[in-house]
Length: 239
Image (cartoon, rainbow, N blue to C red; front, side, top):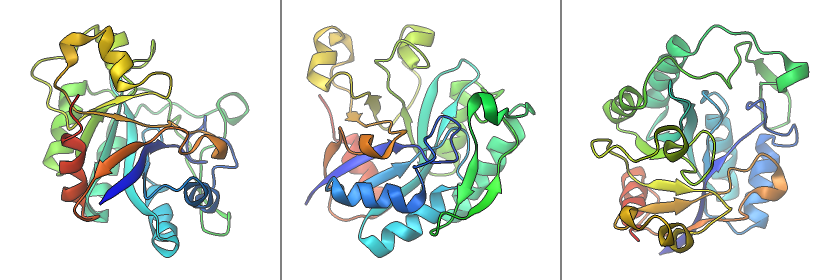
């Protein structure tokens, strides 16, 4: 079967995420846009993802639980994990490597976890926009150790991307796919980056507002909604 997937969505936990990006609003928007699969990828935290997965299950929306990581080089990458135990293990890794810099809500925005009724359960005090004290290769290794999916995010962007920060794709960096922003397409991107042909690409919204959810998406051919089936479908998106 072919499904619509938007695998880069922020919530109220991300300081740059709009306060309307509550769990139920995200699932409502995903249904309205005809999405089958979404990925929850808050900055340097997984704490909102499980709640949205539970709400999604009731609404018939599959949710990959993950995170958008900022590496030591200030490269953004998204990662997803197959179950709560592994997700929590990666959260412990994030907690131990995120600098102890306090968030300033009036400057950066609030960082909260909300439940199905939009009630606040937790407020993150550390600034989630900070970079981890870990380079991209060590982060990728940790994701692999926990059987996760690893995708360098929005590589076409002029900031916080693999290409903007390093200028190239390291040949020894394993990844499941490369992500493109809504501002291009795989075919348009490869016209000026022909050397990257033959790699798998996905495209995601990087939504921070409900109306942006699903504005772009990836069509995945999956056998089922199991984590490994989704991984294999992503890896087959070769251009």
